[in-house]
Image 1 (cartoon, helix red, strand yellow):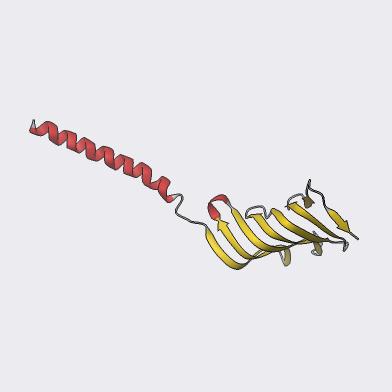
Image 2: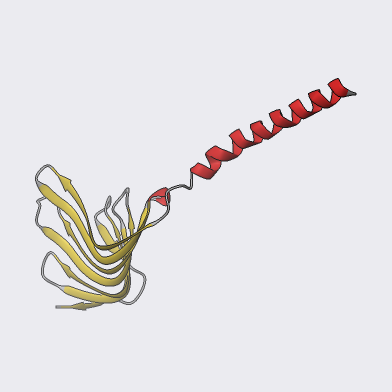
Length: 142
């Protein structure tokens, strides 16, 4: 009986070790907790031109999902010519850290390149397409 117990104990140790090896990498994938920051700015440039600048009073950056949740936001985008094309302020924003798309919500106020201003409850800016859109009522002030 002595040798059987020894083999069984050895097998249990091996199984426990195998489980530990499988479990540890999965647990470490979530090792980066969200970062809470104050007075932050995100800037995307191409050559010497600032294409996007997003500033917030406070924010939570979640690297694992590539998002930043922002409070009290000011954002500006430039066109291909480097001139301002859109500027907005809002209460809250969700910035995609890969694409620099922004979902702005809460008292969204903006200015277009031609000087027209607008207000609305929310707006999404799709940077790749260079389009700001909303299906909520938006008031344009000329």
